[in-house]
Length: 231
Length: 231
Image 1: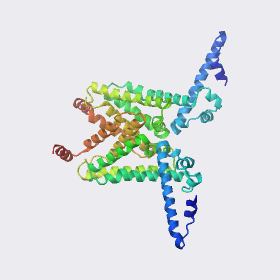
Image 2: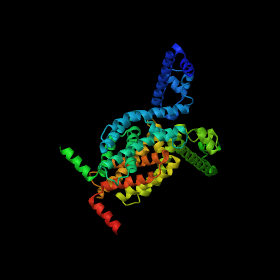
Image 3: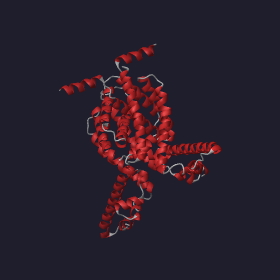
Image 4: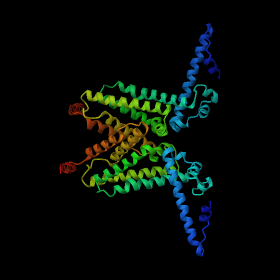
């Protein structure tokens, strides 16, 4: 509670500034720690399973201490979606941007997404569980989640367009169609590996992706890949 | 409550038999009506959202009246999974069995599944929401759901094998791979149409299926289809 009182009423005079900054920083760290715990919990039991009480228990804080950092349960849920979004970008999107534009970048995006999805076969994934929880509702949590998923889909479609611009994928390929089929592979992997405990699902997702690329590749790109394999 | 008392203690003497049978039948009808309401509710809010209290409210019965038909909430959930399984078979599987074996039957299975999934874009689907609810649990409800989904997947794989036996799909096609990719299209349709409200998702699922068939078709079957289109 000390943290809250001081960060809400920071002292801006003389020597008091430095301690106030330290406390503010501590407040941010505490908030980050709560969001981290909340994301872990939401991955397992869903965004709707989040409660101030459960988080207080996990973090060893008082309920009012947790509540002080979030105006409402909804704000907590949105913070968790934003945190997931940032981690997804950091682990999946940005590293793939290092790959050359075209199919190599699309491949890197898929590969990183596979790593993320494979890790989530044990932990759960809020993009998937959240879609089921919020598919019949409107409101800011649903909107935050849908906006996060959509921005990733836009990035996948953009990667397809760049691969077309590079002359690697045929012009007739509809980026929406390609992104839809790739999304299906990821969803099937999560469903079959996590719920049905089916072995080999990750291999099938990878094979499916390879066939999508193969089907839409231009003759020139096929020849280039073929030369690469022989070299 | 009358229904329960008499069906639990049926009188087996003389003229009392006929009324007892009628009461038993009425008991079965009541149970079926409760399961029907429970399935409707579970589709919308999930199997885990089911409660004896909510069903009592929907059906206008007393809680003890609803409880009399199911020994536990778990038994109620399993009854709902079985009911969904039977309806899925009746609407998707059996009608497709009327189509000639091979690609036409696989196509009919997919088409019926699409009709079912499209209807569930509004109502929700317990194969999908249930997978998220029970993916980190064990127990009889999870097992009933996984067994129901798995039996449908076996049927899809069997249809692929028959299409191979008919010389329509290539021998190299792995039925598990084909079934996985088809499942992905259905999951992506449900996700993108229901959660993201993305227009055109059904068309993309259909196109995806057409491309799977095209990719795995034998030259002989392609030629036959091509002649059919020209005729």
